[in-house]
Length: 232
Image (cartoon, rainbow, N blue to C red; front, side, top):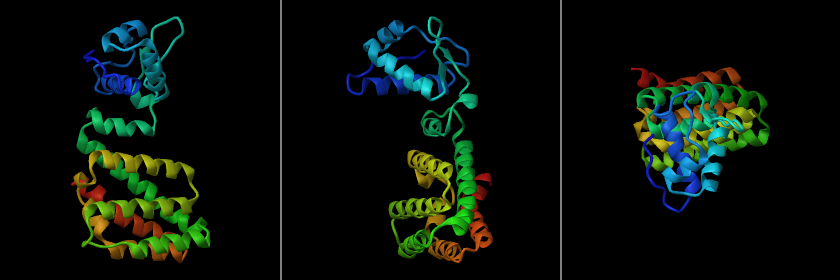
């Protein structure tokens, strides 16, 4: 393991980050044992309480198995981790960046497409009015990228809230955080998608009409642009 001393501020967070990096980078492989708490504390030059707290978080992330009286062993993150780990993957480079971008874009497209369909079917009149109002306020290519990025998150949050699907809502949170970590400008085709005000207005109109088929198809076309660009 490649370990460096930890500053005193946010000690547990820093230990957690280094342990996650060791696992996601492959320097600690599945079924490898971790050093004992005392040894980790000495290596990190921190107290055992900070190490214990960090190990609990690593375990909650699905990366290790802590056995009472036995060795703490690394788990295969591909089989045990959840969506929250996507953000760490963007930071560590454990997955090739282009593939990770493509996978995030595909997830975004799948979630958004079905959420648009469900929003047209399930949303209350108030929720539909909110989607329409948010889309109407959206600017086009004349707006700064940061403004378009923020507006996009607000619109899709409203659409997914209207879909009534909690899992999609949590997935959206992860997608937004991943894009922020990567930098949306690295997603090929994403700035052009955000700047297409007319496409977003049309999508909002079809949702407001409760035309679930048209809403689904328009969302697929809109969000699929980035997927197609990354696949090319």
